[in-house]
Image 1: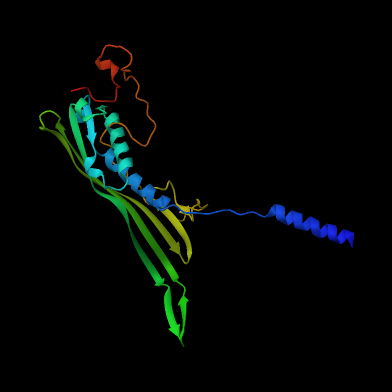
Image 2: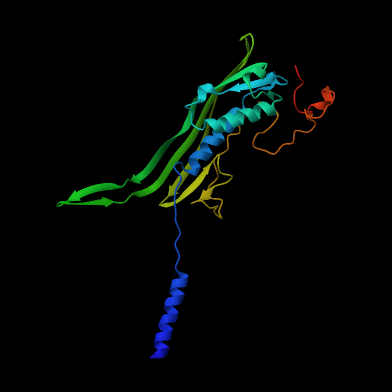
Length: 253
């Protein structure tokens, strides 16, 4: 009897030791949505040719993007592009030679879908309701992030125009596909290769969507590592020469 009690106690202790709980939660915005928007922003900014402002002390004015989605990320990418194009960023507008004003016509996502089969249907029979599950042969959903931006520059003191970028409108896509209920197979600009339900499948049956690379207007890809070699440190006295600038940046005008 004592052995049976000891065995029960041992099982109870092992069971208690093995109990666990994991808390799951989701962010307000999905990771896919954030990746789509940030990718569209990066590729839209990369298309802006800021080299005509190289060598100037520039203040980036973002006052007209206060209600824009992902304003802070867009501002940071624009500042990065200014630096990569050979501009000097002024912390205050009164310290700048040129003011660059930025605006965003659209920053956001939308979604479309196609179903070949029978969608989920709710029916009522004899006072009782039920739902017939979806029966699909082929199914596809497409989500895209869009960034439409524009910039222009003017002299701070005179207010006269210097330069304008024109409009850059870029979309980044993510596509999910199901075949006879199997899926989703995921591809698009935010994926390196086709994923199956979040993992890379061991098959070449499905080719990924061809990535739409932005035509980079400057000389630096903002998404790749790069060292600005040869840029003089302003804290150290040194003569300013043409050789002190990176070889891949345009000359100061």
